[in-house]
Image (cartoon, rainbow, N blue to C red; front, top):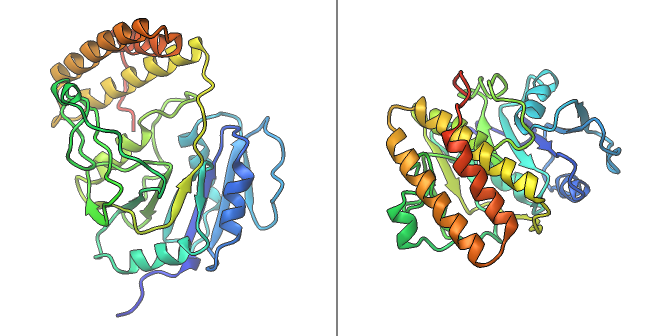
Length: 300
């Protein structure tokens, strides 16, 4: 069977908002056994220069926003590129990862739009009865719930179709994803749920899949958010998901409010009981954001 793709058809777009492990990510890409077609790195304009810069298209973005930063890469994409690998800088590739990704894509049927990867050191959080009751999680893999919340993936998933993909470690087939760089997403520092919005709408027309076949790990870091930042993240999460639910007929605004309000109230009570001000602030942000008017346009 004729191969549809070679590693030279793959462009990797790495985004960073100032994390200190960008060089580790780039080094893992540079150490691949298969040569990629292109490497593009987008960093905020105030960030220091990259230590490993030879052979890299470096973009200095005026905004810390992953969707915006990726959109800036559009004008640099070479004509031979067929597959885009979106990679947050916290992900580290095994030296055979690109070879494995190329083979994986050649094994797929013609119309697959995207394939996401489960990191080797990913551990699926336990799904509780309360989470199911509040419609915030499910035992089904890669499911988008009626409330706009999602279920995650099982570490042992070899490869399966899903309804959404994580944007920080995913490949897209440009033949079916020409709109990848034409998204209408607000300029906010935390690009919350941007992956959900894009992948859920894409899977309505084309299959998207998740797999554990590619050897990738992610750097686990301890959250350093202060109370103000935690509130803002909770607020933005509620606001973006509300916009998502309002514009998708398969989802339910009633279940969104039910899930967001009750889970936030329970989260506030729990945070007070353990005196965790960071979590308390985040749940207050979610509760506030759920009652706030969302964007007056369809966020994509």
